[in-house]
Length: 50
Image 1: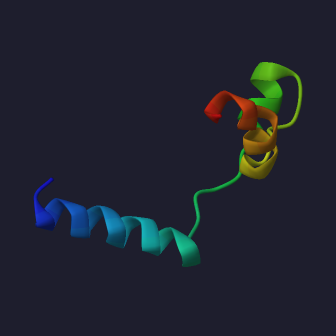
Image 2: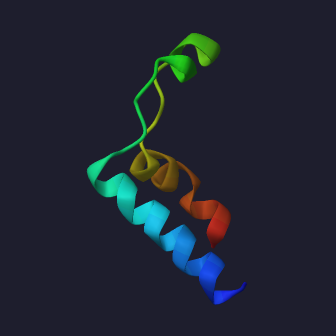
């Protein structure tokens, strides 16, 4: 990956710390249940990575 592209990606990710993406109800609407947190997903799928 070119260094300029990598820096741009890192800057964009860092910007989301202070200005995160909005939370929506799309997952609840589409799946009929609330979205899981990343921590919950990781816990549920830990065995897949062993």
